Length: 157
Image (cartoon, rainbow, N blue to C red):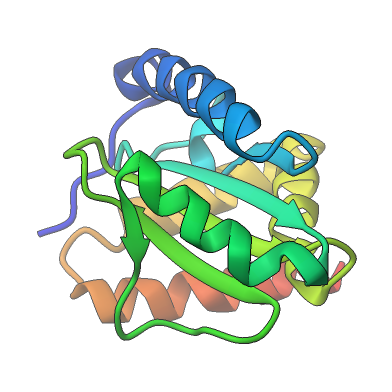
C-alpha cells in the first residue's frame, strides 16, 4: 500500500537534504544547473516523502558528469527510461533521493515546467493531492501510470 505524507511531515527533511546535495553537486560539477523538483518543493503537496533533484548539463558533459555523481553514492536506476539526454539516478545512501540528470535545453526540462505550473496553481496541487490519496491501494505501476497522465495533462496547459 502506498503512503503519502502531508507537507509538514516530510518537507523540512527534504529541504535539508536538498541543500546538502546541492552543495555536494555544485562542488563536483560547478557549471551544472541544479534544481529542487518534485512534490517536496511545493508547499502544499502530499508526497511519498522522497526528494527529487534535476541536474542539467551540456550535451558534451552529460556522460562524464554522470560518472562524477556516482562518487556521491548514486547509481543509474535500472529498468527506467534512459536516453542520450536523460539518465535517472537513485541514491544508495538510504535517504530516498532521486536525480533526473538531463541535457540543458532538452525536452526533459519538462520536470522544471511541471514544478513551476504546480507552484503557480493551488487548483493543480489539489488535483494532484487527490490523485495521490485515491491511489493508496494501487500498485506502484498503476500509480505511476495515473501520475504520468496527470503530468502530461499539466504540461499540455
